[in-house]
Image: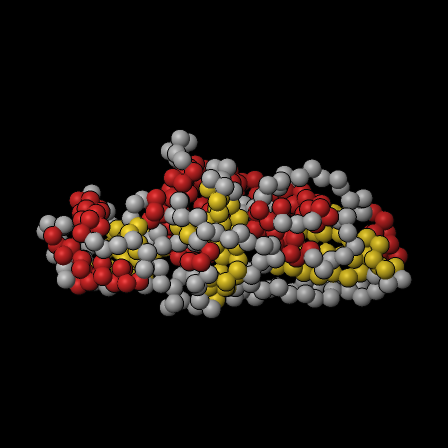
Length: 401
């Protein structure tokens, strides 16, 4: 799974007007057999205005707003300085109110991209905006005023209509979670996103939540944005992390449970296998649900401007929480593993995953249950079984046809 990100800077005018375009565009790959896709950035063209027109435009701008923050406590926001938070608030306020252009409390445009990306990391639901430009109004080589203009992909009326349609779908994702624990909420949303939404590089609006809730096809950026958006509605701290994974750009999440941070990668939980007729069969994989920094950094490399926490907790890891994590292959452990497999088989589950504390234990379990076919001791009548082993994460998955 990968995410491609393009950032293009282009001088649009000379003299007193200086405009730059910042855009986050990405594609994403599902597995080693997929390649990322890059969408071209449409160039913005501007004509040079006369000095008088520029002064008139500059004088028409309002003073920077003193905006009340709606982002206190959000992860990326809290990583910023007080001055940067003020700019973040002004930029976000403009986006939320769909302003065409606002004045910022700064004359330095060098860090605006980083601040804008912090907004996108904290607020996964901003489906109506994809980029921005800023304008520096200069006199005698000195910037006097700087404005921020978001690039919207729809009108305010279209946004309101789209939001209503998204809200109807969101209710289905949150159904039955009112009394759930925070862990149960994260696990359920993770599972529902994978079950309801297919991975497709060609999906429309795949950089925002429209592709998830309305199109039901997306890429990693869509999955990560939807995860953050839903966690926000459930009052669970969550942020979008971008970077590289297995050589390609990618997006995933951090969630906080009981004061501890965990990594979550919904995209990599969307797995498939080929059945006897070579059909692709999708199933939910829990390898990347609430994992540590050490595990995540084996194949993920964050590239964000804010510091990331050192995730070391195991309490809410899927396998630990579901009692599917084993530190030995003694007789007692073998019996418990067998019981887990039997229960999944008898309940008609499509698959079951087991995690081990070492590669050696994972290998032993695979050989005992699968190679030597002791799985038949626990699953009466089972004639065919598919399986997958992940020796990097020390997990094996039994898939029932």
